[in-house]
Length: 352
Image (cartoon, rainbow, N blue to C red; front, side, top):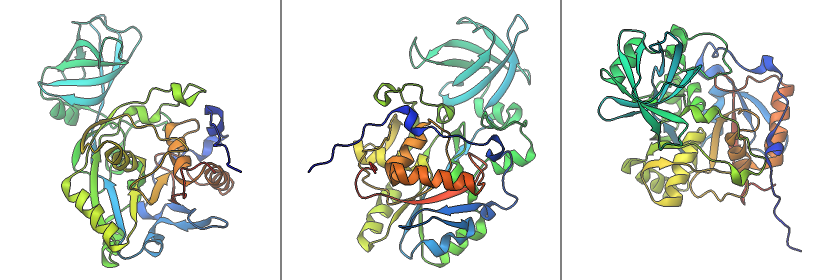
């Protein structure tokens, strides 16, 4: 008898999380975070992240997202004196940016905003079109320099404290090199230089992609029918060297280990479209056929988020929900500054 694939709805990806499990600060040592090993067939194993070399094999390929988080949160006032906040999503040519704006009343096109630090931002219109949720602004000087001088670390909305010197260092991977993200690729925050050196010694290979993570990564899916969800867009680039590293890994029988869901989105977007650079709106839900990624390192995600759906597609819905119940019972830290898990891909589409 042929089984009928299950149809998932938004409610399937909800769970109750005690608020005190939402990590507000990073672990004192990056690789001393906890790691829930969900790759085995039985009960998950509670480990420490620096155990990772024991869980990988010579010839495996770790693929990281090398995006660098911008100091993308900027403050200012309208001409009327009303306070406002911009969160830069993307830097465009000609000193223009695309950003979210938090303000009591949206300013009209042509308005000039006076920003803290003495520069200005002119409202140029909505983005990517007139119905877009984001706005396009013209800055009075080069945006990267302005953010570096006057911006704040764009901590996620569930982190209660204002950004500090600790956040400037720790809400960034040790190998970040391509500026453009409004949020960190958080699974990679657990890697430090000592762990990377240990992995290199044992013969685990390393490659990188770039996906500039947007603030949309924190947005919950709001439609009960998943097919109605409009996915946010993020820019990615997959270098030729990484394409070759993946081919070499396949040839030697190694596993492609994606560090974080943003790396998964990049690799599987490339596999679907053949496009090595550009924007992706890929929405991965149970039933998706993965073509590149064999193993995934990821943090614990928000209820009803597209990332909960992605990991359920990858490792199976029931196994993921069981791992989350275990993590809550064992008081793992959740979300960006929280702990991590190691997952193996299910054989077919994640419909378990």
